[in-house]
Image (tube, rainbow, N blue to C red; front, side, top):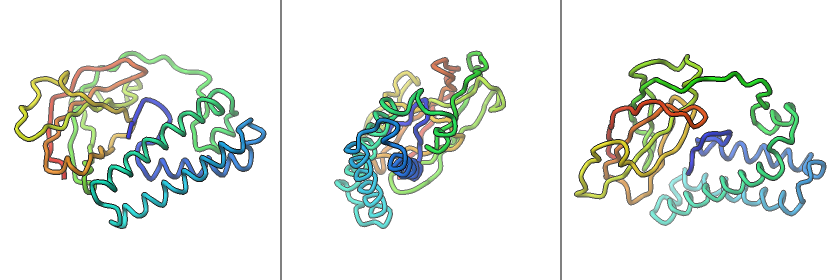
Length: 220
């Protein structure tokens, strides 16, 4: 699933927690916020279905190639659904108290300008679960206390067996953004045993710092 430069959670448990919070708030206030009852019902049903599927997957009931792909697709669909509701009914319309109730940060009414990031970051990988690699941000220069270092764009590429390692970070074809200093990357079932190459750039509102070095890991 996508991990981009905004409010949407990175961890799957947090995606479900956010969705359940929204269901509660929509049922209590959705009519006043102009959210159609049918959309609230659809979001509630989709959230319940996703939660049930995720729990079955955690209990090894759907840990097959087809089941893993189904779960990945379900989380992508939930992200798209949540973002669309945010765009239509939440963004720029809720008070700070309402945003907090929706498990969102209050609007930043007095943004402090920050410059372009200059820190260089690499990553340390660790095992998190089947077909998942944890990644920990490691500063080579600079530090997280610098306000310009708001988040991290993680670029990666899974190599097919026999493919050559990338010569530069520009050859990495996928990316996601996270504000976490420790996050994870989910992979497809069929990627197990393959090598993934990664590189990281510090990112701040579209402004990017220097590339960190390429590093690799074997997908569990």
